[in-house]
Amino acid sequence: MGTSINTGSDKQTYYKLGLYAQNNDSPEALAATFFNGASMHGDLALVEASLSARAFFNLVNLGVPFPRDEFGQYIGYKADHYPLRRATSCGPYPSKEMCMALIKEVINRNIKVYENRVAVSLLTVDENGEKRACGAIAINRNNNEKPEFEVFTAENVIFAVGGPGSIYKTSVYPNVHTGAIGLALKVGAKAQRLPESQYGLASIKFRWNVSGTYMQFVSTSPDGKSDPQEFLRPYFKTVGDMNSMIFLKGYQWPFDSRKAAGGSSIIDILVYIETVLKGRRVYLDFRENGAELDFAELNSEAYEYLEKSDTLFGTPFERLQKMNPGAITLYEDHNIHLVNEPLEIAVCAQHNNGGLAGNLWGESLNIKHLFPIGEVNGSHGVYRPGGSALNSGQAGTFRASEFITAKYAEDSLNTTAAQETAEQSIAELQELLDNTEKQNWQTEREESQLRMRSGGTHIRDAKLLNTAVAGAWRQVERLNTLGVPTDNIDDTAEALQNRQLCLAHAVYLDATLQQVKDGVGSRGSALTIDPDGQKCHDQLNDEWRFQLENQDFRDKVMESELSVPGKIIHQWIKRRSMPHSDGWFENVWADFREKKIYSQED
Figure 1 (tube, rainbow, N blue to C red):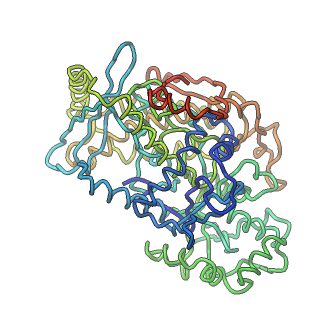
Figure 2 (figure 1 turned 30 degrees about the vertical axis):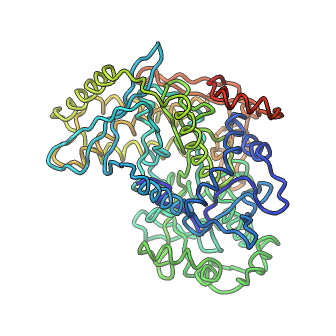
Figure 3 (figure 1 turned 90 degrees about the vertical axis):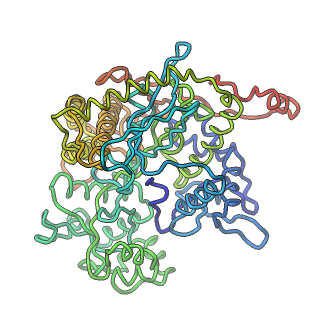
């Protein structure tokens, strides 16, 4: 039910340490690439780089078919303009291949998995003046006769719930992936860099990132049929300029504020204007070329690419068939036939670079024994190499497992206290079941998602954000007073999930507004509107002026912590620098033997 097993692209990337030929890579070199993405702690960058090879070869040993040559070298390629041949792939679904291999290993080890459960509460107890995770409460979706809660107490809690998929209206997160960061935010877990998400163009009937081979961008009225317009054309001096920019957008996929003025991200802005501001629908039409298409008018980069690909011919569909037939098959597998129908798209949320704050070993900064792993761990900076998220999740699991084995393996939980907090949480959940004023979960979900669409996307406007934040906290308060339906177990589970999703969207919006107020400006996948800023495009009015990045914030990290509902403490801290290792073997070996490496000092 997660993102990794249900998503991918035509060449999804696993970004790792370079391991091929005379690559001259090193953990510090890879860490520097991560660190230079801005606002990432240097020690976390070095951890993810150092564990990269171990995590990668673990996947190889489990059967993931990453390609290698006859000498056993694992080939790589350059990705996202980052140096060295670090990226690799094994087809359209590398993350799915990884999941299948890991699930097989879980089965081989006879590890019990409780399936079809939905976590609805994270349990904590006070221990020596600090908060400690001690388990979770889940609702069992297998039992449709009546809602049934299950209590899981645990010495340690691995919190691997992915990104906040269901807080967004337009999203590339799979429909089955909800996210659960709100459970941790509710108990006060510290978060960092929440506003730093990645957005890009994606199909919405079947959620998938899209790129292009010079198809038409067409918008229609809300009915999806009437008043078709090739809406990009008026914004460009020539058809060649427009198609060349579409080409760039094809491989500069994420929205990037640095490419808003004079770059390919103007395409995302124009799609946003059509869909969100004008209320129209936008499609990629592969069936015929746009008016006046002339390959000779393309810029040299675009022309040479098509020429080398032997695709200076035909319709967009015919060119796609030549260059990437797998994309056609992918959509056909989901009942979308590009040969005879257009593909509806929008600018969609794709990945959250922020999340919960963890230390060197993946443990929450302020809740002991809680280990946020994967996308929910906000380790990434503002910019990150494509595919580095897969590496991050694998490296994080190794770190958490190693630390738990070394330091948290013994029974230390006060089970009586854990049982008491579980009983209290069950009682609160039971009140929601008994409350006769029931929540309509579909309506509530729609409200919060639409609010994120207006205030929490790649376009950041202080006026819209002020309105969105106030509305978000009002919705949180309302959901705290409403009960949940009990006639259908799926409705019960979805309504309970709404509570943590609604809280999460309020915290994300609150953090985003704070970042705008603090004057961070436009960076990463976010454009901050400023009437006194730089003009975005000659054909757009002054409402589309934007604030340039304040680079002073590249060395800072915003932390956010919920103290009481509606009250978020945001603070900027200086990011930790990149460690430079020059250890003496005997000394490092001694520290390892004596377990001094597991110190929690930052």
